Image 1 (tube, rainbow, N blue to C red):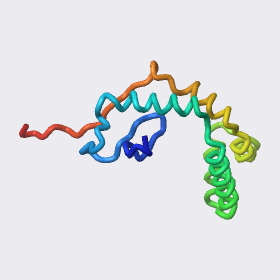
Image 2: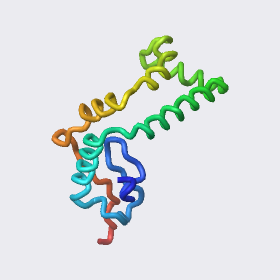
Image 3: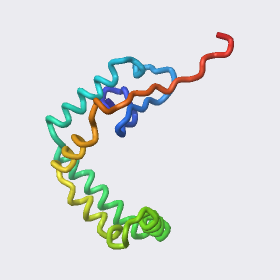
Image 4: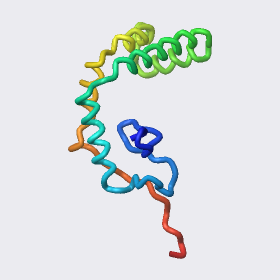
Length: 130
């Protein structure tokens, strides 16, 4: 959807920027387009080069984070208050690096179910004089 210039953000939901709807996002075809693109993704699989790039970026981000005491404290504080152990937090970067293409496809198949989805449109309030 981003490549079709219909979205600027996608995370299990369709989110358009702006209220004038220049690309017809409030049209009924958008949920179907999302389903079609998701089906294509599930059929084609994860692009290995993109996955490698993302993992490299994550690793670099984690290395640079070690230089920032506040960021490290925040990481451990958020983890501990979410019920993780110190070991969980310490091992998380390795867990992320171990994610495979199949893991991603399996997760997508288990999360995205168009029979259990809702499409909502956020619109502006009608003018008072209309």
